[in-house]
Amino acid sequence: MTAPAPPHASHSPRPATTRPGWQAWLDRVITPPDLDTHPPTNSPPDPGDVRIRYHATMRTVQTPALKKAVVVGRRLWLASSPRSEGPLHVAIDGPGETGMTTVLRQIGRVFEGIIREQLPPSPERIPVAHINTPLAPNSKLDMSIPFAEFFGHRHTKDPESGQRSIDMTQPVCHVMKASGTRLVLVDGIDRLDNSELKTAFDYFAYLAAECNVSFVYCGPGSRDLVNEARRGKRPGPPGGGSGGIPTLAVLPIPYSTDDHELFHQVVKAFDQDLRLRHHTPGDLLKLAAHLHRRTGGYLKPLSYLICQAAQEAIETGTETITKELLDDQLIGRFDDDPLLL
Image (tube, rainbow, N blue to C red; front, top):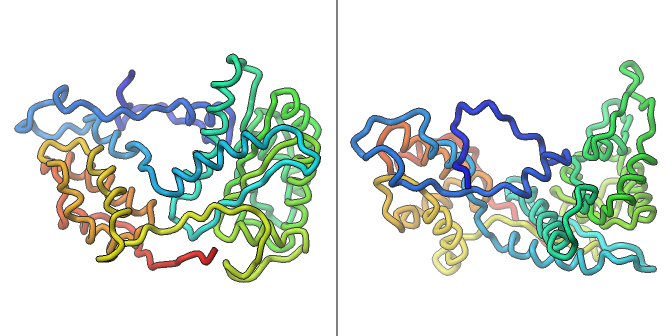
């Protein structure tokens, strides 16, 4: 198994919203470096230390939402056979910065992992497609383009009008049917403007019916967006809808005197994966209250805070994370923003 690439490596990974990038994300294995293979403690800091690159990524910490994503991925696979009621769709909803994209991709990873276990390898098989909701300058929304880009189709647009010169829907449908695509991950669904909702969701509905694919929609307010899209208007605040699409909520992790065990589990997972010479297991856990004050329990800033502090600890030679070092890192302030589901 290869070690993480050093910071100066020239390789730039493809986005996960392309087929090669998605495959690379699925196959990626992050292995904590062995401290015994690195220079001794009294050596000067090495800018090429692979631990700097390792702490930029680290392994994904399992949260309740990620654990639930495993269940959702399996259920979507079990429901992927043709049904008269049509395929099953799911929304991932919550405030921003809680790690929703990671949860979205975890569902895709589980789904494709089951396919790999059940069927012999085939380069022609594409069980999962992953797209970002496109922006639509001047309200010219073209939902076929992100699908075409994921599958590697060439496409063109008129640079002046912005209108597509090639409709990619039929080539996309052909590939999805021929390659056995059964799941589509749609990130950033909250970027749709009011005027674009009906167009986008009519397009998704067509692909779902024509190609027998399930959709997972991800973004703040996604539950109500999906439920209200066919009415042609944007819904009210989160929590204002009723019923509708099954929804996986991704929320900030709480922390209080009476409710701290979950946050401690998350911090402990980071603690165990740190590779710092002066770090003693449990040191990070002692800073749990301060970590929550800095991040509000939002997973994305929590991850950035710990990773950046670890990198600085290596670069400065301190080789341990302290409250002072955490306070030296730049992250935003995050207030509690619970989603009422």
